[in-house]
Image (cartoon, rainbow, N blue to C red; front, side, top):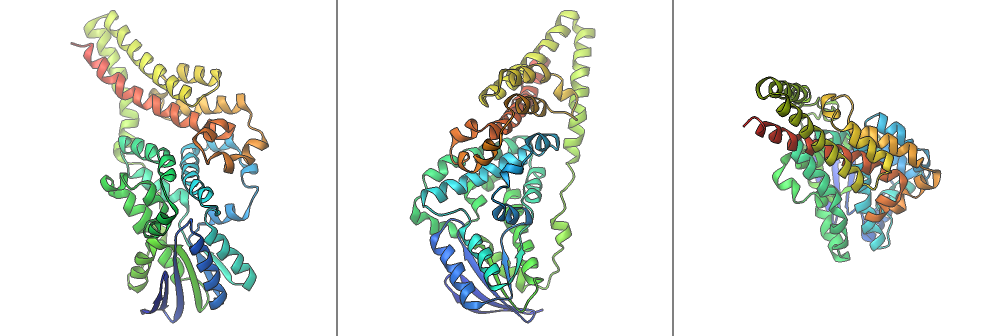
Length: 394
C-alpha cells in the first residue's frame, strides 16, 4: 500500500492511495467558501466517486425533507432513545443557529456534494460512522457527573453560537463542530477527543480508501483531514466492526444499578431495626421527598403538563429501586399522551430548535426535555438522599 501527497491547494489535498487518486477537501460545515469550493472542485475533477462526511442516517435526513413528519415520539421514548435524539437536536441547533446567522444552510457543502454526485452520475458514499454509535461510545465512556457536564455543555452551546462572528467561521475549519461545542469539556475528558475525532478519522479514512472508483473526491470537515491523511498513509488495518461496536455498560454501572436499590433497602431495614420505627420512617420520607421534589422540579423546568409533573412526583421514589424503568420515560410518555403532538409540531422542529424558547414551545422537543430533566432530577435525588439517610444514624 502506498499513499503519496502529490499536491496541496488551500484546503484541497491531492493524494494517491493504492493506485487511486483521492482529492481530499477540508471544509467548515457553515461556510460559503467551503460550499463553493466543493462545488467547483467536483465540477473540475469529475470523479467516479464522492465520499461525504455523513453517515447513512444523516444522508437520509438531508435527502428526506419530510423526515420529522414521520417521527414517532412515543416509539422513541419506548426504545430508550430520547436522550440520544435530544443530543442530536442540540447539535443540530448549534449548527442551525450559525447557519441562520450567516444566511447559509447547515452542511451546504455536503448538499452541494450530493447534488454534484447526482448531476455527474458519480457513486455517493456516506463515509462517516453512524452518529448514534459515536454518541453511544462517548456516553458509555463517561461517569455520571461527566454525563451531566456533557449535557449542560451541549445546552450552553446556544450562547456560544451567538458569540461567533463570520470571520471566526474560517478558524472553525481547524475544529470539528463537536469540538467547538465541547471545547471546555474535552480538556478534562479525553474520551471525547478519542471518539469524536480520532476514531472517526480512522473510520473515514478506511471508507475513503475502500470506496469504488479510480478517482475519488472526499468532502470532510477540515479538522479530520490531517488524521485521514495519516491513516491513509499507514499500512495498519482499520477494523470498522470494532469502531462500530457499542461497548457494553461498564461493570461498575451495572453493579451500581442493582447495588443502589439493595443498599437503600438495607439502610431502611437497619434504620428500623437499630434506631426504631421513627428513624426508619424518617429515612423513607427523606428518600421519597428527595426524589419526588427533584424529579418534580425537573419536570417543572421542562414546563411539563401537570399530569406529567404529578407522574414524576409519584413514580420518582420507586424508579431507582427498579433500574429497568426510569421515571423520565414515564413522565415523558404521560406528556406525549397529554400534549398529543401534531404533524405541525414535527414539521416545526427544524425552525424551533434554533432558539431556547423553541425547544420549550414545540410539543415534541418539550417531551424530550421532560424525559431528560426528570431523569436528571431523580438521579440527583439519589445522590442527595443517601447522605441524608446516613446522617439519621448519628
